[in-house]
Image: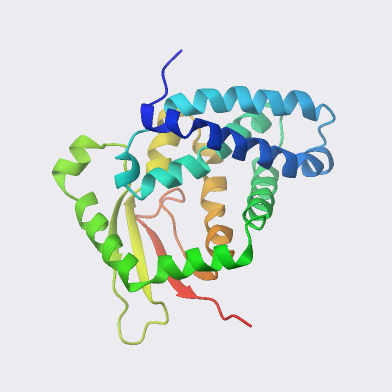
Length: 228
């Protein structure tokens, strides 16, 4: 069996724990929405598939790359999608189950911590980091070293724009992953997780197109949600 990259191996326990929590949260929906009665067997199949996914995860720079966290948080949903698809569950139902499960998981974190993370993401300091990593992502040297990484541009708002800043992803690590491993059909489910990931941190994401949907780029636009 292929080996797991040492960076992901170091985080393996945490990733597996997160997967088990997701499956706990998904269990009622697996029974009611996917009409699966042998949930224990499904759970084991998912964890077995996740072990395979861990060996497939591309290394894109480890802690030095903000995109490493995206892979560690979201590629587990590829394992869930693969197993449910083999069981004949419609892709749209899989997407609904995954999105509701992910939102429930995110909401287990205390609100104050979630909102603090959102404030950090929107901060001027983080925007400086985003600009730097975006500029690096488009260089030939970075793409040669990390060919499976995302490629993106930082987008400054025009005077009449309502968003605070944006990111245009010109190449997507998940699209590359899905293309390599035969997961294109379930790829849109990963895209659907983004909205709740940001909303639970107090951030409004607006996006009208995706690479997975055939567009030239994914147009992420960020602004702060109003708080009571």
